[in-house]
Length: 231
Image (tube, rainbow, N blue to C red):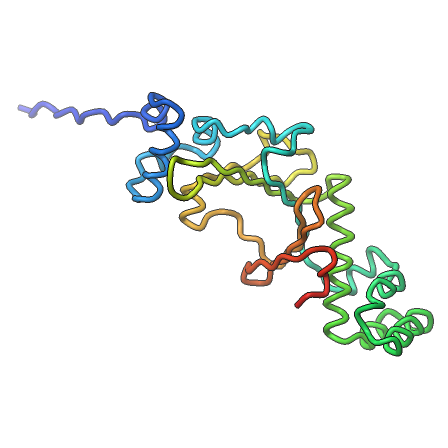
């Protein structure tokens, strides 16, 4: 004779448990859960958690760009590729006139007139190439910000009663920004190092003149337009 199967108690749905609380309590409950790593609400999707905490996902579309902090970014490329796609090396060198000695600037301008691209690249120092790459990347990021041909990230912070803010990340890979095409990650992902790691990228704050670049390890350096040659 078979023994009767013992029914296990049904665990409460974490989303429904969260939604049963007032909004302020929800926020504090998630903040405590992230901090203590009990992870009662860890299995809730990023989008569902964002909705539960009243994150304005609808603001990711349309003309309301103020509630989220937006970044557009492009992959860094070699100077030769920038010159091939954009040309105008002489104009870029004119922009670094104040960054090099007068005699050196004249040498570079004459090189633009007389030398092939390959020879011009050999003429440039490593520092000059790095500076010109930044200028081209700035041009690319500014251009792409206007026509949508870039990859974008957006961040939104939810503030609990105390402790660290709960940060949400929206990642887009399409020229047209739509909520349904976004990947939404939440504070558990941030804690666990699962926010998007940008390596060898160049980007800017949207509608701002603050730029950043990352190296092969994803380390980020910020600078203003006027500090483009800062090392």
